[in-house]
Length: 196
Image (cartoon, rainbow, N blue to C red):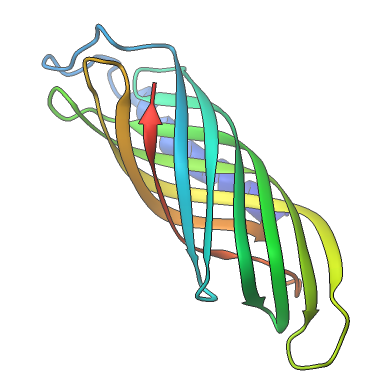
C-alpha cells in the first residue's frame, strides 16, 4: 500500500508541478465565458479486463478547478460483471463500488477541443461469489475493501450549451492486490459522458 501511495503522490506531482510553473493565462482564442469553478461529470464506464471479461457501470465526479488547467475532486462509481475467472477462481455477480479522489490536468486547443490527463485513486468496495475453478467446492460470498486506481487520457469538447461531451481511455484496477492471490480486475478502461 505504501508503494501505491508513493506512485500516486509522484504522478500527482508530475501533473501539478508543470501547472504551477506554467503561466496561468488561457490561449487568446479560448472561450472563458463558460468556465466554471465546479464541474460535474456523468460517465458510462467499460473495462475490458486482462482476464477477457467486461465490466460495465457508471460514475459521477465533482471537480473543483483550483488552477486554470488543473482541477481536483471526488467521485463514486458502480461497476458490475456477471462472470469472471481470476487467479484460479470462478467468480460471479461481481460488484465494485470505488470511492476516489480525482485529479485532472487539461490544456485547451483552439476554441472547443480540450485534451486532458486524469488520475484517480481511492477505496474499492467489492462483493462477489467465489468458488475454486477446477475443484468441486461450494460457492462462498465475499466482501472486500482494497485500493482503486485509474490513469487515463481523454478529449472533451466545449459547447455553448455547457453540456460538454468527452471520451476517455486508460488503465483501471478495481482491486489492487500487490501480489495477494485475490480478485483484482484490471485492464483497458473506456469512458464517455458529459461534463456540466
